[in-house]
Image 1 (cartoon, rainbow over the protein chains, first blue to last red):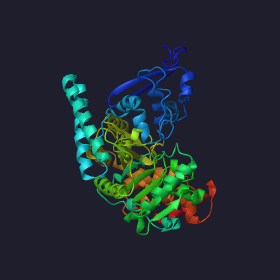
Image 2: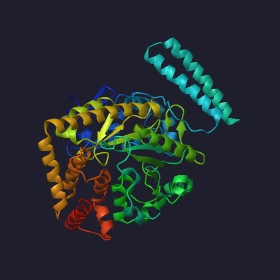
Image 3: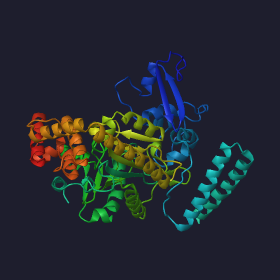
Image 4: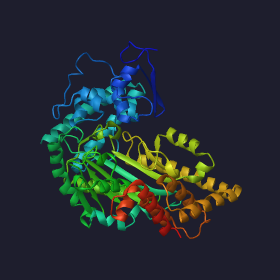
Length: 170
Length: 349
């Protein structure tokens, strides 16, 4: 079997990850495994190393666009995140959102937060809950391949986000 | 409170009280929070980290739990023995003492609340309680979170929840865990099956000191792995249900030992007691195994004059930095092994 990253050498390092009953396999040659920081036996590696290695595997390769992406707030590039396994600031999430979605899906099996939100203002909180609710329903619709419903929800969400942005700036 | 006061007291969460305290050592909930737009600690240079610290520290110092005789200190002001001491007491993580610049910690008087500033995230809040008390931990920590966000702008997105440095913590930013003492499951050789089942249900199992540590002394730390896409309540309900099952398994296994293997069990317990009472040199590895047996013996009524609190205290006091703080000087390994035996003989009668 050939290495899944360089596509050249024979894969000798085989990683299996099981999260939420979903199994992902990664087959690397020694060179690429070392590059990704996945060292030999006996050296413990943290989840973040594994993540950094998984981030560019599975996600579609956009020509050049992804690699030149830089967070406007903290100047972190996508490459930096892959090496460090951690983000540079809160704005990184929005900046790299295209690549983050599949990553979060892999880790948590979900990309929509449900749960506590900051009590910044009573009003914002309700709008938050509405948006969360809509986004959750959108995910479910996509999962059930109910694309008509998904399109309707997507439009509702766009409207709600516009409304929220307007309220925030007032 | 000063750091040297800690050695004179038993941590509030170590008292061996609380529901199911024969099996559940302690419960813990931790929240990760960051400031909006301010660079996360691992990406920020020292100056940026100090700026974040200057914003956060005054707010933390004003919390009720910290204001009333709590301890607030910069990590850089602590000696190596003291930083290690805080790790041993489960008040800071190992990561927090790796590099000491621009880092601080705030600890409540009874040590049940600990807040690290500039660890992997800007804020790592932790609440610890004795016994199976996850709900109490959850309520307390949520109140602290709410109090902090009145003055601090937390990084939050409707889609991804509370934003953390590592994507594995995004969403609720919450990790709920329970420290269990499972000697009977180990002795009856069922522990691996139980661990596999727990892992299949989406939880992780770690040793005494968290990530990367071994399950010494029959201690197992079980915590949730995933923080996004489930509410805090859902995470808690899930882990509580599973822990309740594990507690039942351990209770059953203890009954089995008592009815089917009493003689062997009693012998193991009494031998451990004998060594602890009489040894003059003892390693920490041996100590932890013997204390585990003695704790089981006490729980099952085989050893009548040993209390849970006594054994819990010894687990903590026999660690390297604790021994040195008791002796009030730096000790080399052979000296520590001797001091350890001395402490144990004094406490175990």
